[in-house]
Length: 310
Image (cartoon, rainbow, N blue to C red; front, top):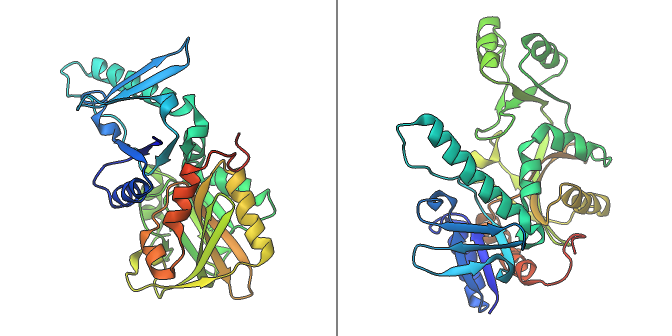
């Protein structure tokens, strides 16, 4: 029987959804919840034999080479019990993460998406620069904690948005209040931020799954459509050049599936914002009718080379 592992919490909506879809295909599915390691999960790796295994608390054990694919939904890190000796706790955490990371990289062709792709996503300034080198339009962007550079960048453009470098908060417009010297100095002394030119237009989201591309325009009155529960999704066909760029972005960022966010300017230009290695998709599928779930299932069940990987 085909075995597929899902990285994520067993009650998370997309994990439940994908598990049910795969089971309908007769697939044996289990979840790898990394918070359960090392207290409940047992992970093993024999370096000389290139063999590993996962054993769950209920006694079931899977050898890594028996797993057809691993679907990356979320990684939660590991949880070490509280120890009086903080140094020992630090050692235990690093030891546990080292083994987990090793297993996740030991057989990269199994993973959709891979550890390498996930790491690339975390370095969003590098992601932007890499995509631009493909000839793709990106916004004027400054990532900095230098108040002088930030002030000069903002004043050189009509309108600027800001957001975290790594993620975790919604996009906002920069106002003169944000540039008040004391406030700006305090904020940037805590962390850098990403500042980008605001591009009038509409948002477009493109899902790439293997060689399949689905796109929709997202009509919303809010700056960040993720805050708009009433956003309207309209299926569209990308221009051929943008569709090809979508495939090239996916491959260059080491992804096998992704959601690419574009800003479609008033002049008709597609401007790249971000490519996510583990995007949510259920609402998008429901609103557009695109067969994202079934396409993902086929990607996971495929035995052929995916996106150039053998």
